[in-house]
Image 1 (cartoon, helix red, strand yellow):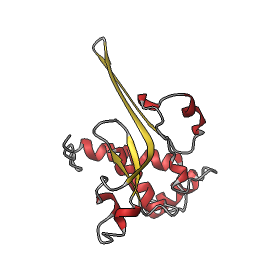
Image 2 (cartoon, one colour):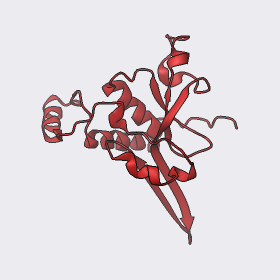
Image 3 (cartoon, one colour):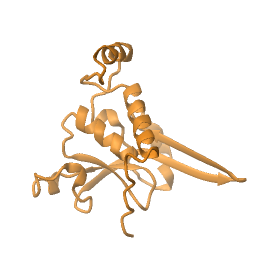
Length: 165
């Protein structure tokens, strides 16, 4: 799921975001970031991604999902706000929710603005392992999404049960 990729990006490239996690919501498609400042102090042994979101503070929406069926065709879309200008969201109600705070990954994890992906790809090829860097690139986030979708499609990642209403 997309929230797994966002959590992985936060965990591996976070800048003071150790108490922030991404979660899907049953009532609204998309991925939302939550702050666990209150709950983390109570349970330090539990990973932040497994803390209940009931006690967490929702910061806003970082990714949007859209699905539509029209004339027998299905349409779908995914959008993750990496390092975009969020001011356009002030003129609309994102996904129909008035006042929904939109977020971007760059505010929570260091993003590579100079696109050093060729150098990283060369390092990865030489080392036969993923290259590590202090900054995420667009290509790295995209590859994480592709890998996650492929693993789910192959059955290597189990789908989570929906939370009760």
